[in-house]
Image (cartoon, rainbow, N blue to C red; front, side, top):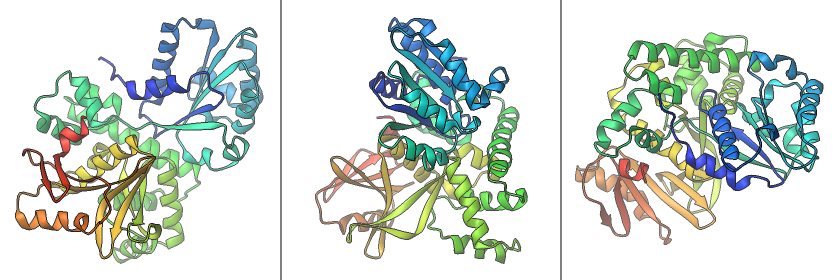
Length: 399
């Protein structure tokens, strides 16, 4: 089984190499963070870095179980350091170490350590670690495989439509590539990933005492990707379906799923008022295959699935991604970076003229000169409508 080349992430790590910041690599479990760390260690060896200067600890490996004690972890790294020259320290799943913040802070104070840590929970960047290391770390967000990474792995870029179908019908978790031709094993693998992340990891870490209710909330959110939601709306809908639940409980479960990178929120941005709105966020799932395993296939979901895939790709390319609101209309995504804004509308097809007009309408209401793009699955030539450029979404995804 050949490995997927994750060169974008490797190149990012190399740009930060030897710089006086902690490299914090975050992402959902099984998205390939550990493999990425190993790949980067191989890159260091190619640069001529001595193997003895690379110290790697995986806190989920039983061999390193005792290093979940912060004093022992700190002592282990110190005892393996070389005093003359730089040491490259990699700590995988750092949150498994109690009071890991103190260890990270202490190691960072040493000028001859270049420190890389991974974690499967965003909470570690919102508490004491963020306070201790304010301005001294960079977060590198890692996702499961993008459509481009999958296509590159196949070795050819022809027949993108079939490749996209394979991509959304199977999984984007890297190990899943080995099981694409074994549907039963793939289902069991995704079921295991789901159980580990949602029912064990999330439930145990956040002390959620009702796993069945957590699963109900998870299924509801998976089933409503791309729909504007509020805490109250989720609670009211589940209660009306016979699964009574308090909004405060929903909020707690939702926060746990987001912090564990199972779901990604997308806040709304008022384009006319140039401000973020506080209500009716949208949520997208980290892996369509896991959603399919939990809910089964939904033929009517083609547009929302494409929207989900595009959203995750935008998160890979940009730091800020929002849902756009322009008067009473909505634009699927607004991205913002150092160059300004970009507006992106997503639709499965716009070959029907009424559908095309509906998708163009919100973009046409925007009067600034920032790029406006319409992405569809239609295998048609690129087109332009009053400055709005229409592209095939699959070709855009593999750019």
